[in-house]
Length: 265
Image (cartoon, rainbow, N blue to C red; front, side, top):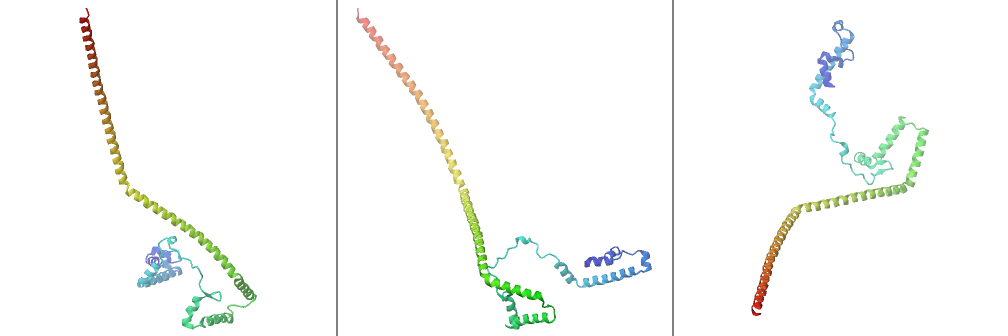
């Protein structure tokens, strides 16, 4: 705002931002009407304010910087402080203990009570607070509330503590289940990483198995060729033996027949 005011005081085209009246024409300035005088006075005030602000540059910079937001992050990501299990100490069921501890070094033990009594007397004497039927009704309601708190407060507090403990137990069970699930997931992940680390051993074993299978298949084929060749050679040997025996039998029979024919008349 101060920069705009300073700039508008120097630029005639922007003086309407400072002055509440529209800009004056040449004739109106020559006439020197009240509007022109008001605009001139306001421009002088703006110039003086701008010069004062210019002299107090560190202060203005601090003011401008103070207008910026301090927190640039998302508030939803801020850590939530833990809730206290029990409330702070109070006196007379309403006044916090910190108030008495704050006044003890300065006023002593009776200081808070004197302060409260004096404040009450001041309000009544100056008629800042007027006692009427609403005061009696408020005192009656306060007595009833105090009696109810003293009478039924422990039972209600025990019931509320029981509900709170059940809620905390349910939340703790959910938390424990989540922690166990995450731990199991971490263990499974570590196991999978261990398996991945031993993957090259598995690949080497499979590669060796493939090589052994190929070697076995090769040797089986060699054995098959050997058996086939042996069978064919055995067949040829047996064929020659049979042919030799047949020829031998034929020669024996032929010789016997010729001998028999030469002997018989």
